Amino acid sequence: MDGYAVHAEGLEKRYGEKRALDGFDLAVREGTVHGLLGPNGAGKTTAVRILSTLIRLDGGRAEVAGLDVARRPREVRARIGLTGQYAAVDEVLTGRQNLEMFGRLFHLGGRRARQRAAELLERFDLTAAADKGVSGYSGGMRRRLDLAASMILAPAVLFLDEPTTGLDPRSRGEVWESVRALVAGGTTVLLTTQYLEEADKLASRITVIDQGRAIADDTPDGLKDRVGGDRIEVVAADRADLPRVAKAIARVSDGEPESDDTELRVHAPVTDRVAALTDVARTLQDEGVKVEDIGLRRPSLDDVFLRLTGHRAKQDEETAA
Ligand SMILES: Nc1ncnc2c1ncn2[C@@H]1O[C@H](COP(=O)(O)OP(=O)(O)OP(=O)(O)O)[C@@H](O)[C@H]1O
Ligand SMILES: [Mg+2]
Image (cartoon, rainbow, N blue to C red; front, side):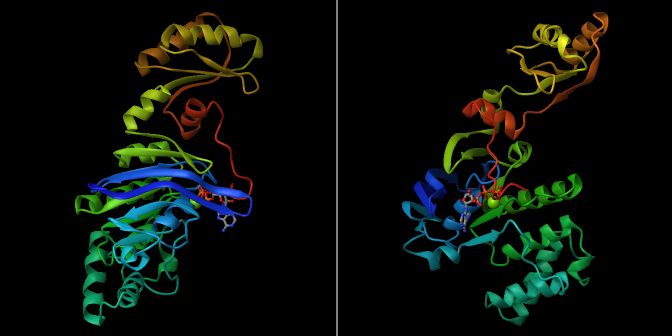
């Protein structure tokens, strides 16, 4: 399909009884970052592994860079890069040695491999740490080195499987910067994530995956609109106060407040965040309602799932962290 770097239709993958992919569809426009958002066990890694030709599909069809992954895997491999969910760099080597090793694995030749390693170290802001052992790198530095390694051949399409899971906010920001730089250079990126915020920051389009199927495909704004944007959230100290809390929230919200009776939590979407927070805090204080916690929060993956499916994201027992 023209203009698409990845196009998959009806992908199936079974592991025994388990349908890891169950009719999964995906279309990623060239030159964009596309987010694949889903909870543990949704099928994100399985999709990435099929598209990067690491495993075979059981049904459906997929093209990457215009090439059928099942029929022309070698040619697909020549056009893609992959950063797995778990870092693949060698602990014992330095950053530079790692990149030079990858270069030689890709038959670049010693001189070209050294040159490419130096370029990538510079690009990913690793020059100062280039000759230190990777065992001393922070999580963010490691992921950037991983990204650099998957860029040795400047791929047309890069698959990033949860590139920031487990990173602190600062390292996460650094990885995001690197991804943006790659796309500015013409690479198409398919990025899997469990964080709505991450997909929102990086991707121009998001596919939500649940139990092996795409359950939504939208722009970040479109998705957030469906979910209802930012939310105000109050945790009451007393169960008896829940109706009063709900009423105070209803006054400032454009949606129906939702109550969680076990956690004594009431929340609802708001547009004017600060005005809503001030108003609710004042009302509850005036009424003498004791509050455990009050605040604003951005919609999470959980909110997306609740909206789209009517249930919370099901954590897969085998893969849940
Ligand atoms: N090699 C395998 N053998 C058996 N079952 C598998 C295998 N790989 C994946 N699965 C199952 O397929 C489903 C999808 O797994 P997958 O790893 O694709 O999910 P994921 O979205 O990447 O999850 P996570 O966020 O935890 O990485 C899960 O139920 C998982 O247990
Ligand atoms: Mg995974």
